[in-house]
Length: 76
Image (cartoon, rainbow, N blue to C red; front, top):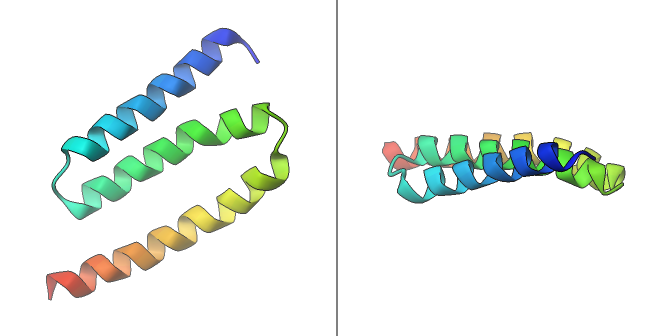
């Protein structure tokens, strides 16, 4: 993979991590975790772990649904 793309994905991961660190709203933190996942996924595929990337593609949205349900219950 091109070194420029690797740097770009690392910057996306750092932006998501910084955003998650400063965000106070649980929904904003969930969005930040999605940004981190979006930056990590191409790096995993570039290393050749396509099976791990496929598993993460299923696990990340399911865990997001569960966390959203927990956030909704906490607000009541």
